[in-house]
Length: 144
Image (cartoon, rainbow, N blue to C red):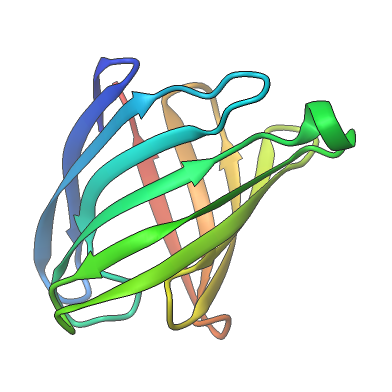
């Protein structure tokens, strides 16, 4: 991922299992404030576990620690996936853990995919992912 601007990120995603390359784009037209959620628009690969396809999504996310005292940030949205050519409701919950760990529960409109990420610094992270909550996998992310 390349952070061209704090509100514009783009990059490339490679899935070696199926030999597929996808563009990644994240736009943040509305930033989060103390009382307002962020709105995020993006493009990525279609849902986890599909053999191919691109997704186009809009989500809203809000860090709730200020209101709840808990280090959590839920999100919800809608996505169009080209694999099945349909719209789906999506959502999830990010939980900040100690020592640079975070846990993310992603619901792609069909299945739940829990993950645990360790961030080495602001540019490198390693994620252990349970695809469909049963098949293990790893992702490595480098941002610049």
